[in-house]
Amino acid sequence: MENFSDQEKKITNNNRWLKWTFLEAGTRAVNKALQKVIGVTSSSIGHTFYAIFLVGLVQTVVGSAVIIFKKKKVLVESTHLIGALLFGILAFFCTTVSFIVFLYGGEVGVNTFIITLSIVPGAFIDWIFFKHRLFTRQWLGVMIAIWSGYFVLNCPSLKEVMHLPLWVFLSLATMMAVAINQGITQKIKRIDPMVKNFWGGLMTAILGIGGLLWFNLHYSLNFSDFIRGFPSKLIWISIIFGIIVILMWIFNLLAYKGGAYIALKKLVMNGSYLTMAMIIGILLFGEAFTIYKLLGFLFYCFAFILMDSKTWNFITGKFQVVSK
Image (cartoon, rainbow, N blue to C red):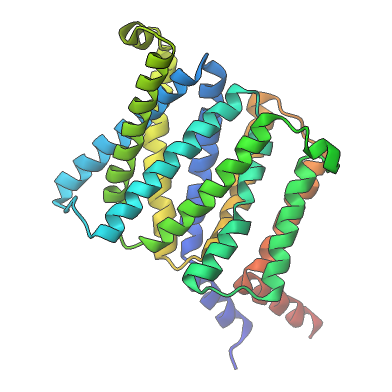
């Protein structure tokens, strides 16, 4: 029979995907802060389209440079190619909506928390498409995670839910898109990270410039004047945003290569991401820290313990050792 130290060592060895997940959470938190800055600084949705174009352009240029340097093939099998393009389309949607959320006064902490609820549709995607069965204890963890989101929204009544700000519902739409993209990532997890960045970034850039052209035609603006009037600060922020997105996508892919499941990975990543984002929102943007947010965080911790079998076995094993 294994002693407890052997069990602990085995748990550590089998959780290599955790470090990539924590790194992904950190890059997401930084990008959330940058989204807030871009959303607050932008004066129109046209600015957000231009910022997204720059983000996609950075991904495409860096991705192609690495591919050429490493002599990788940019034309991959059809499943991976289509998956990377679909990922780019949904990433464009998520980024656009996120900028709009902050353009309409959204909070970093609450927006992040709503998006973390993607573990719910993610669990169904995991179950239906990848046959990763969730046990009763794990489903309870998902339910507690949902409950934590309800607390962060200050426990609204049904009537209050119907009158929540627009940015809350936009955050819910982003949540669904994020869950689908996690499914796509798991499906194409064997693709080279930089090839994924190239095709996904190219699609984001194309859609970004397309949205920008539509905006200028729709409002009969002079395109060159619009570009010259784009705040220079946003150009540099968008470039930094693009670089961090590259790292975020790489960490996301490496987590799945390390054996992560959608629901479990999302719970770990979301708990870390949520904590970092709430701290950033409080310290940098003066967002309120309430008892509801604290309870939501505690619920997330409990949900993680229930969801992760290795963590559950580790903790219950500790209790068994103490009881002896």
